[in-house]
Image (cartoon, rainbow, N blue to C red; front, side, top):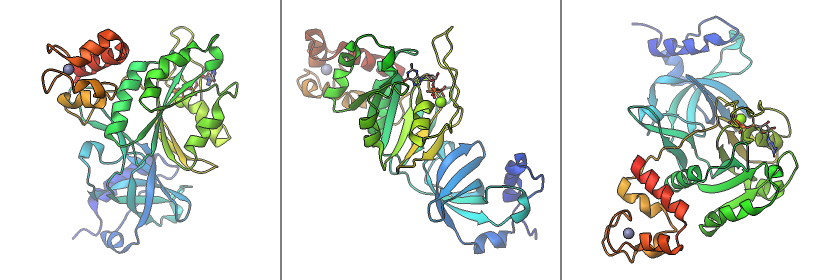
Length: 341
Ligand SMILES: Nc1nc2c(ncn2[C@@H]2O[C@H](COP(=O)(O)OP(=O)(O)OP(=O)(O)O)[C@@H](O)[C@H]2O)c(=O)[nH]1
Ligand SMILES: [Mg+2]
Ligand SMILES: [Zn+2]
């Protein structure tokens, strides 16, 4: 019988990019006897995952075991923020400065932020899990904030049981503060909104306070200053940042991998690559209106039940949009998301 677990052996080819070209052989029997460690996925690098073990403060570079135990579908088997069980590999002469490991188990997610993948066969793309907050990161200008994206991410936050926050950066570029009115609609929905300028140190204190000792995911379009904010929180330039393109007024997609950073003042922040779109995942078309809470008090007066609030006669939601009691942009968002589902 073969002494070595063939699958594990092959999977370890993933470590070849490291300084050492040596192969790592793990005996099946070693794996079953070894002590397990527990940690959190701080970064996913394709087939290699970085796992942080809080009990000893070490990071491990891990691959997945051939037979991994996970409550999740294959497409989203593991995501940044997942709690995992792993076997540390004692491989002294690997030339690695980071210890290695094999992930054997992924635990259930408490919270998550998921979107629908683009492409022909959409699947659930879990952007991060076990986070308490999602900080939607936009800028006043360059690039201009996009409320339609906010409406989509708000739904995903509700589905994944995460508290949403909205942040508008680069307010130093604004002549007047009339942009504030643009967000009353979200304030009414009970979402906290922060208007900040990182470069001019404006409005940062309240935002920082709300992130202390929490695990937060930052998400938003490219060029809005997400990594600039991460560097500010980390108190050092750990993430690369780049000027936006003056030709297009858009970011250059500088950050290319999601990565969790442990903050010096407690808590953690996950920096992510800039997003262009956000597809809804995890709800039925017929449930969409239930996630537009500004419709709630009116929807019960619709003549028909259920009502899609699109074409039915006697629809109270449509009437209130016409009367100005429901924000017309929110209603347009609803129609556009409904169409896309
Ligand atoms: N005017 C102004 N510019 C800012 C501010 N904060 C960040 N920037 C600039 O915005 C540009 C983009 O910043 P990044 O931090 O790289 O943006 P990002 O959101 O991480 O972009 P991706 O990684 O591509 O998603 C840089 O030139 C920053 O210096 C601000 O408060 N005001
Ligand atoms: Mg970035
Ligand atoms: Zn209706």
